[in-house]
Image (cartoon, rainbow, N blue to C red; front, side, top):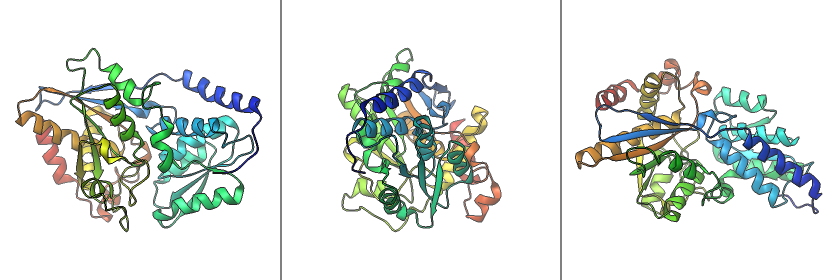
Length: 354
């Protein structure tokens, strides 16, 4: 982080006001009840985070990270904001940076979907691509040092920038929306992990509210997180061999807290894409890759509950829309070039869900 003299209090007050005013102009995101005929005793819900102004779950994180930096007086009226990102967080941070009149630079792997790069630029951000995804952290810090800016560092601060006890975080929001449902206290919450911030918020909130709900993290097969969950000595792998953007990492990020997780479900890229395609058909609109990963884990949990004769509810996250992935997850040629055979798991999932 940058070192700086004490900020003008008037500027800081106005910066926080602008972000809070933007929040007040936005309604909460919807909770979608999705019926699965094969499991009538288990109700499935999607918390639709694609309806945020920047189109993804990361809108919440970006707002929290920038407020955290402002209130720590790490950011001033001339500060350049810099982030390492696989795309969605940077889109949202660019939105808030423009709201404050600040320069924003996103350090992203060159493999990130072009639509995300376009979205960062649309929001007024600059894009700095790197060949090696593992190099994003060091390059972001280098740019912060070079510009005298501030590295927002979502991978470190995600778990602490959000108020996990409430204040309209995603946990408080979804539990509030569940109160009139047949099973208002979910049996499971299901999420992915990129920084680990969302799983940390959900896990802490469950414990703070003394709820019996369990937390499942759906993790790409190529990610380090599920390996670390089962063996804490595993901290790093050569690369995250997954095409699902936004979740899964090659490095165990500081914000990933495995002790808050009750179960990890490992999902292949083919399974995630199959679930993406099927859910998009069932909802009548496209969803992003991480939502497919979540759905696959949800159906596995629904199977287990049904086999045990259990009833209840499962809530997961619709992380973003599929418009940003038209050239990737919805492009059969792109998938074929990467030898991702999604049709077989698609048929299996369609048969299973009924």
